[in-house]
Length: 191
Image (cartoon, rainbow, N blue to C red):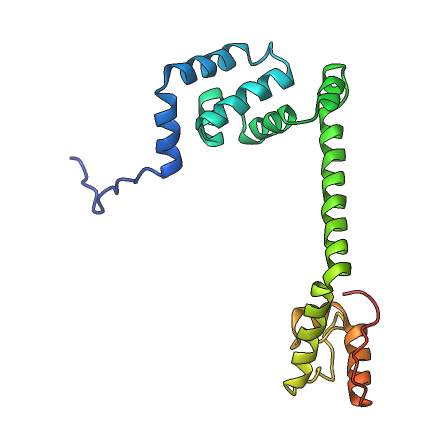
């Protein structure tokens, strides 16, 4: 006696990135690159793998599709592609035996510092970020809301906006300056 399913099996729709990957895989040149990677993965260097993977990604292969084809993790494939985009000096250092992980970590730190400096420079030129935070705080107090008298276990008030909870000292000094009738709100500390 066989049991029948009460609920029919739904057919899953193909996702666009999957179909694009498989359309790309139909190209003989792409199939040749993938087979070269499959056969020589262990014997190739990091940069050689990265350049081939970067070429496949440029041709339209998805990272997940390459993961299935090559039997390697998507993280590993992404890391190889990033290594292939490094400057020539870093690539030579990796070929000479330097740690690729350390080079990528240093690159990430430099990128974060560059983005942070760009935000600081933009704020110095326009003042838009500081003005926006100050405006949000002033609007909160102009709406007639007040901080709760009893803070929670962390010493912060729970019914205030997130930026007020994160910085209770500047908010208190803002409340004191607005209650004294001062026109200019001066925020002390960092938000």
